[in-house]
Length: 277
Image 1: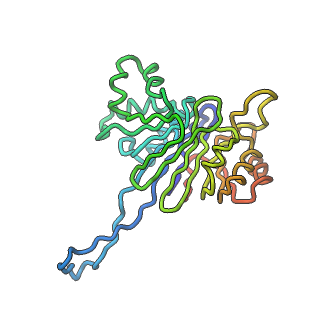
Image 2: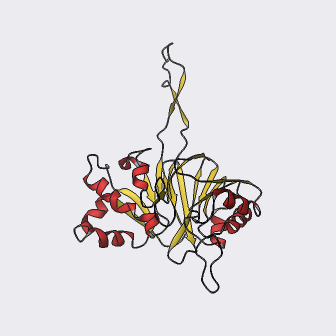
Image 3: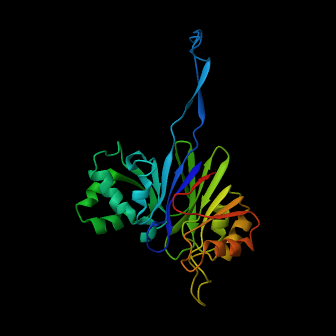
């Protein structure tokens, strides 16, 4: 798999950095094409030749500004699915402009794009877009509501998700392909379900939205850098990619603080980065 970072900013986009959004693309595996039985292939052609299978592309979180960045890498009409961790605007606002792109642009998708998102997402979009959109939204998005643990397959990618702790309905994600495991926290405080979602992942994309722990009595909603290191260690991941980092923490600081609790590879996600999983 290949992960492309579209944006990481929290809680609003910054110059050169959109809010949370990522493009996950399946690896292209060679497919063997052989001559039919009892038929000899031409001498100029190998008995079997490799050709790439179609890639599967999934847009993970549609934070403000990410649609523009997505188009650097693929056309929106060619997405196989969209997965949104929760309804906060810095993870979902660009679904509004995606609606316009898919409904009115020159090249509409052949069928509604599967949208895996928390319950009530289409109603939330319709409240902004207006009453005429109620009938039109299902022509653009095939909403598959998340309300607990679930899974779906798109091409050669298997998506599995479960609820995490963020104060609103929010979900973490595992994606599997050919024995490789990618995990994404969305926005989440440390919690057992996230440990399970991230278990033994080759790469864990994990937010660090707090500089300091939540104030006394306040339920936590994000990871600190130290929390991120502990979550990665508890899940036994191979690589920790830190994202959606509090604006008061530098990249070097967040890595150093996480490294005090996790001995594996740690990197910070930046817009335009690519990670092979």
